[in-house]
Image (tube, rainbow, N blue to C red; front, side, top):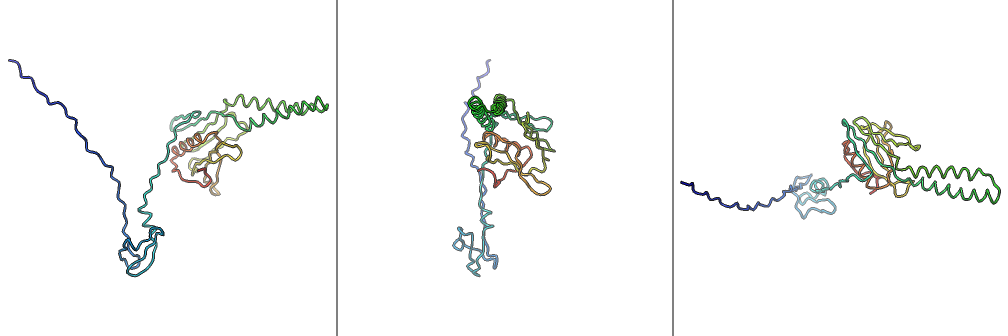
Length: 249
């Protein structure tokens, strides 16, 4: 005898209840600091953060109570790694490397020496002046041309570990390497470059033996790169980002 075929009830789509996000309700009762009388709403001046007691008639500040109920949630933007920056982690250390970019001073130097070369050659052939000026101009033009052609070989390395933060330029191009104890770095921020228009400086506030001082770490050619470097360095060192007066908005 065949077993009866079991009947299965088709699955029903269940409606899930909507989950409402519960936000804490912040409120504050105000009492007179003189007589402890409860202060009513009509006795409070929200614009000036002051109140007047209806019982003993003293006027007092309620700024502390106002600060307790003001909830301001700031959303910090997350910056993703831009092109030209690479991150490496090895045994708890972080290395950030940046590709080279065309320096405005190199471009300006090339134009200056090319102009001087043209003037020097004109004076040499027309006025029979010394060959020294066009020769120096030619050497200067070749130097800046070489730098511009090979700018992609330039790299900046930021090495960070629990003990220190160091910044190195390779080749150094007469830029001195810098290094600071990690525990002395109070804040990292971005400043508009005063010498290169449209470029940005990554600055650090260092806790020195004589007090705090500001130190330029490096210069980059885009704000996105500067923001990303600030974000990653502060994240690695556990620095809570805060506003700095000298920083760009």
